[in-house]
Image (tube, rainbow, N blue to C red; front, side, top):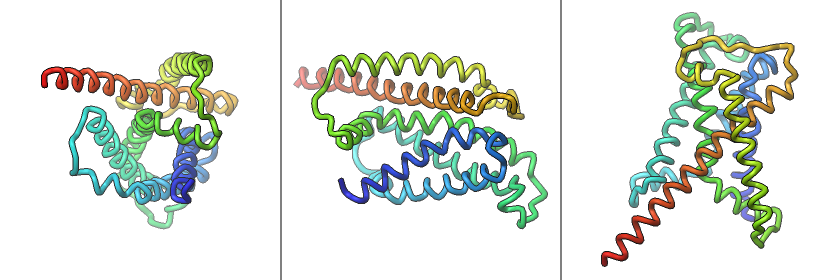
Length: 234
C-alpha cells in the first residue's frame, strides 16, 4: 500500500475516533475539548490536501445523483468545520483566551452547537457514501479475498441492530432538538458512565453511516435501471 494511502487511512481513522469524544465536551474536560477541536480541524485540512484531486475535478465530468449528494454533503461539512473553528475560537475559555473576545459570544455558542450536531450527522453520512471503498481497503489490509454469504448476512444483522439502537439513542439524547435549535443548551449527566455515553454516540454514528451507505446503494440501483433503459432504446 502506498504511503499516501496509509496516511489517508490514519488521518480518516483519527478523525472518526475523535468525533464521539468531541461530543462529550464537558465530560472529557473543556481544555481537552478545545485542543482536540484544534487537532480535528488540522486533520480536516490535511484530509483535503491529501484528497486534492477532488477539488481539481469539482467542475469536471458528469454529475450523477450520488455525486451531487456527495458534493453537497462535502461542501456542507466544509462550511460546518469553518463555523466550528471560528465559533470555537470566539467561545474559547482556555486555548484562545488571550484574544479577549467579548462580543458575539452568545451567537457563537449557538452556531457552535448547531454546527456540532449537524456535523455529527453529516460526517458519518459522508463515511457511509464511501463505505464500499472503505470495505475494499479493509479487505486489502486483512487479506480477505473471498466473499462469504454467512459473513455478509451476519454483518447486515449487526448493521440493522446498530441502526435500531442508533435511532433510540438519537431520540433519547435529543440530537434532533439540538439540530433544529429547539434546545440550545446541551444536558450532560455527569453521573452517567462515560462508556454508556460513547456507546450511544457510536450507535448514532453507525445509524448515519448506514443512511449514507444505503442511500448510495439506492442511487446506484436507480442509475443502473436508467442505464439499462437507455441501452435498450438504442
